[in-house]
Image: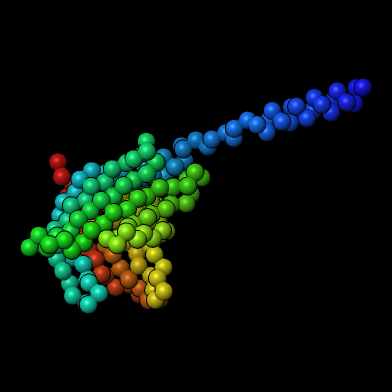
Length: 177
């Protein structure tokens, strides 16, 4: 009778333990890593240029709105660039977040056709952010840095081999107060 009671007791204990919900990871690591990108938060305005597919350079004025969402776990970036005529030339919408381990950064930009890509990103230090995308015929990277005078400076580049880079985009923005 004792072995039956012991087995029944173990079975009930095992069932109770397995029925407990898993312990949810705390977002501390995610919050800490994404906090490095806090320098982007706010509304920014300025100018820039983009090299279009036809090789034509277009100047634009840009506005970027950057806000933290979901308690600081996701960074939302929303930007519009317009020609002097007011015509929309560059539109950016992206989200940025870290995995629960705080090591893997996900940058997801969307385009005007509703498509998105998952790009590798990193925030190696406060005031610096970079995202890269491997393409069938090369690689694109964008680097955003905070200048000593507090401006958002962004450069977009393309490389066929990952060694020689050609600038395809540049803008400088000032925080709107």
